[in-house]
Length: 371
Image 1 (cartoon, rainbow, N blue to C red):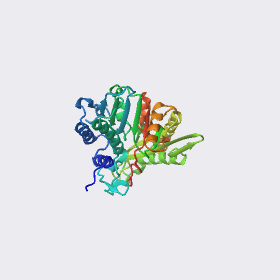
Image 2: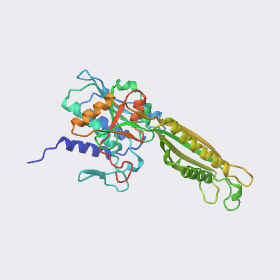
Image 3: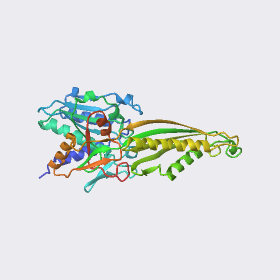
Image 4: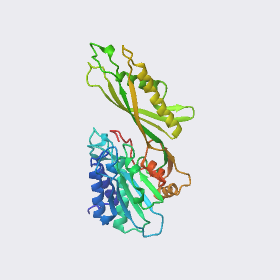
């Protein structure tokens, strides 16, 4: 007798199909089309599926915006929002998801899996399909899949919340165990540091040059030595910072005159995060004044920074949190509240008046090859 496919089989197929679609930040169109077609195949009203235009305003210009699907309720209850983000990080491009025992891993040893956040996309899509196919009674619902989360939560930051139908309970799926409820997250600031020096021949006249690379190196070394790079602990205050990207130089026989760095600072405390930023900027200014050529000329630095997302913490009795805990318990799970040191789409939703709890959907080691 042939084995009948179960809903678990369909859920697994759904997440495998989504993870296999390439789609980094700014390149989510194929993912959005997959989601749209699945909704249409299940009988969704095409007019209820909407793509916005935030991709035209994000740092990575794109034709793809956030995708939403709204349903009127069959019961008079507060509207609920279910959401996840469509993009993955570059290390996951080219993944070939395969099942090994009770885990899904990348069959391509050079890539991560991309379950962050295609697993979340699959959860939200699966809920929408169940409602449509099984004609389940339900409150008013909004399903949302955002773009460019990984590069700064830009889809959630720029979305027009008036298009969401005024949800009062909001749930985001992104990372960790299914019982993990993230009720707060850190705030993040990112900046580009442009270091300018003076070019000269590195063999014939190195003393006439001002090395932008030397300036950057001295600044980073000071931050590391004084405890302002990496995990930061100053008394009762905590935060993190990271110099994540350095670009500059073209040849070994030229004193480098320009370096660009991308740097971030995070803390749950907005004032301490500002202190971290001030320390970073101070270190680069001091390094620029320190590196001089034989004529006494020195380098210079400029900073272009922005707040990517502000920290938040939901109240212990927030209805969204209590509803999420009840749902996890009803499924036989053990809900555990958590605070994240990373940013989430929930940061911007919560900041804009839609308290949002983030639930895990099984990812392990995101952004790594052994995900």
